Every structure is written in structure tokens, then in C-alpha cells.
Length: 419
Image 1: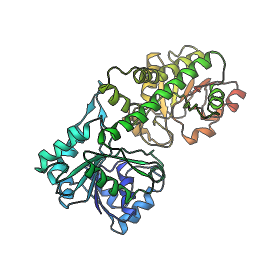
Image 2: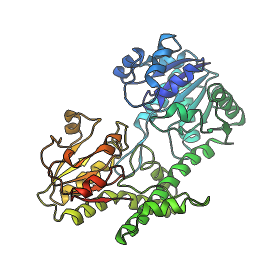
Image 3: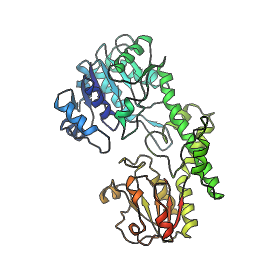
């Protein structure tokens, strides 16, 4: 097949490479000219994706993948399949900000040729494929949906850092606007996905599945966080409790922690809640999870006393260990809560330079003495953390249960965990 993948971010680029490795001819499109140049040079524009650098170099070298900054031109080449993965972010009121996705829809429509199947992998509100994508493509192209071209929704279901493994493992869901379109989409994905490709019967069913699975995780984590708060107040090790509860097959309690970050879990429940104002549990779960950074600061104050004027170090501003990404990171809420308590806040992260920390609004830490520290990201480097690495520290709250507490406790340093 000829395939166009639009948006070469942390999902789109590995997907484009995966499709090219399967033997198809792929054009990867991105509005960022620097990203396009890096991809064409065989250099991933972001770190941390297992296997991506070598795989990218291979498919660039053999000519099965090329990058382009002109989506219209790429679509005019008449691909069999076009896959859109631009981000959909939320505004301050938790409403979708459609600019990037609409821009991509319009560009695809202007270049669209009869016979192409267009797939959206970006997580969207239920009904988007039918009510927003198809009309936009028809208006821009003058073609008719489900006769001249076809639209499907196929949610990405992968995890940054292990995308190639996930593509080979999890069922790929495909929902169309017509039986013929869905069949075309299923056949297309089966040509490069070795895992099960499951027809969903409608684009709406596929759209809702993605919202359901991410909202479930948010609700589950909120429950785990409430268990953790309850257990901490009573001196109970909630980690043992959760492990024991999950030892029988009907309990699947997730892990508590200082924050729920990333592009998915903090965002997609709002897409569901915006369409179902009667929903109660997801709304409460969001409230619970958003309070966890402030809870961590309360725990720190109970550990070292009044934080006013104290220097507190945030360890890790990334939303997740090993991933250089700060989307909805708990570090921002933690910084706000610490500042509100009067603390002098500094930050450190092995993935970020001082200049990058400053750009994100954090004061870099230069190994000067501190009063306390909060572990916000579960970077592997923190597993080896020792008291000598944190001069002057009197108390630590480990929000990810990643640090070995033994050497700190032995040194007389107060140490608490969330979970």
C-alpha cells in the first residue's frame, strides 16, 4: 500500500516506521520543518522510544519512508490509507481545542483523492469521525464519504517507550462509518498489524472504547489514592494491601501516586464528561487525582514542619519515568502547592537541562543544601539515590515509591511514601 501518516510525534513516527517495516511505502507528514528534516536524516526528534532509532534509519535508507511538510501534496499522491495522529488538547475549561486536528482535516481534504481510506487515531469525543471528520473531508475535497472515500476510527493503544511491542500485542480496534469502509480499514490494518484487528461495528463504538479504557484507569487510580490516604493515616502499608487484594482474580486495583500525568488519563475522561453531564464517578475521580500533589505537600509539612522559607527540591518534572514529556505532569501542581506554603522551590530532572527547566518555569537545583525533597517522577536514576546526593535534606516524600528508603532512615532522615 501507499500510506500517509500525519503528525510525526511520539505516536505517529513509530507508527509510520512500523508500517514501512511491513513493506509499505509511507510518507510521514508534519508541520514542523525541523522534525521533517530530522526524520529524513534518520534521527528521531525525541528520545526514549525503544528500537526507534535503528528502525527509522533502516526504513529511511531503503526508501520505504520519507517525511514531508506538505500534507496536501502527500494526499494528492493517492494513498490507499491516510492515518491522522495530531494531538487534541483541552483548553482551560476542559473543552477540546480543535485547531491542530481541524487543520489536519482540512489539509487532508484538499489533497484527498477517490479511493483513500482515512483513519483517525487521535482520541476524540464520540461522534467526531462521523460529525466532524467526514463532513470536513467532503467539503474540502468535493468527494462523498462512504462512496468516493471512507472514514474509520482506530484508537492508538500504545505506551510511549514500548510502542513497537504494544503494536504487536494489543488488539487493534477499527470502527467505520459504513460496512464497506470498516472492512477496508480492517484489511488495511491487517496488512501491518500482527495482533488481532477487531471490527467494532461503528466509529462511535471504537471512539467510546478508547474513552472507556482510559476513564476506567483514572477512576481506578483515584480509588487507589483514596486507599493510600486512608492507610497512611492508620500506619498501614497500602502497597501490601493492594498486592494482597490483587492476588485473587476479581481485584485489579492500580497503584496510587503523587499525580496522574500524560496526554491520556488526565485528558480523555473530560472528553467523556463533556458529553455525559450525568456521570458522577469519573468527575469525582478527576477531583481526587488532581488533589494528590497538594496531599504530598501536606505529608512533607508533617514530616519536616512549616515549609515557609524552606528550600524544597522537586525530583523529576517529567510526567513519567524515562519519558521526556511534561504533559499534565504533577510537577506543576506540586510547584504551586509548595509555593503556596511559602517554600523556596527548586527542581531537577536527569532528562532536562537547566535551560529547559527554566523554560518550564522551574528553578534548577545545583546541589546546594536543601531542607526537603519530593520525588515526582519514577526515573530509574532515583532507585540509587543516597543521602549524600541530597545535602542537608531532613525529610523526603516519595510520590512514586521508587527510592530505597533504608539508607535515608538509617541516616535519621524522615521518609514517607505515597502508596
